[in-house]
Length: 291
Image 1 (tube, rainbow, N blue to C red):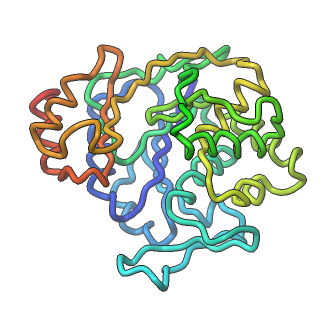
Image 2: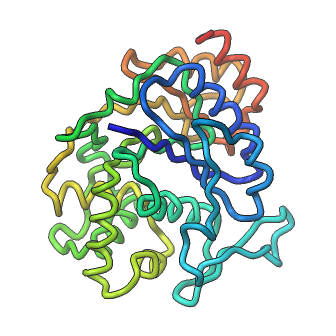
């Protein structure tokens, strides 16, 4: 089994992405190729990270001609906006999710392993342990969504609508994490299924809903269309994620405490860039706890 490691990223996360690449090269084993999925305007910057196990792929290589990004005229932070004839303007987080789906039709590897650019691999891990030709590791956490998690429930509902699932309309199972494995063949089959259900290109169908989660789409497809075939479910994530400031104090000591709470099964940490912990602090804490 070969593994494509997928990282959708952008210029503001370049330093974090570079640290991810360092950690992968130091600690990942097995047969893997790393794809950095970027907007065309970011290509030159990320070419510095290319190598024998790493390739930069731009949106123009994998997106339909009718989905392109432009400078956002109302942004003071030089953000971009993605325009299509079939949706409201899309933002960067939409584009990153679409890249992770689109790349499946352009690569040949058996497994797609998604690593966000704010992830650091801190323990040795062999990608061959993700699965074999019969089944791969499949993250699912049943009954994880409460009624207060309206955004997550909406992502679930929209995924079901996209896939033609009417019963149940909403699933409370969580499929969202990073360091998450998908079968590439399953992603391609899922895109075909979406096109058959919606009578149009899969991306046109997806962007009709501004609230989306690619993990929810894949998870509900595996569970409720494939009935779990070729997947081994687990509620244990391989990555210890600091989602927001409610998880840990945005300080060096807070990060130290967070990293020490990793389980034996976890091999990476993810520190969301918007939490406010500097890359210098991330590097110091990771290197002193996992040299």
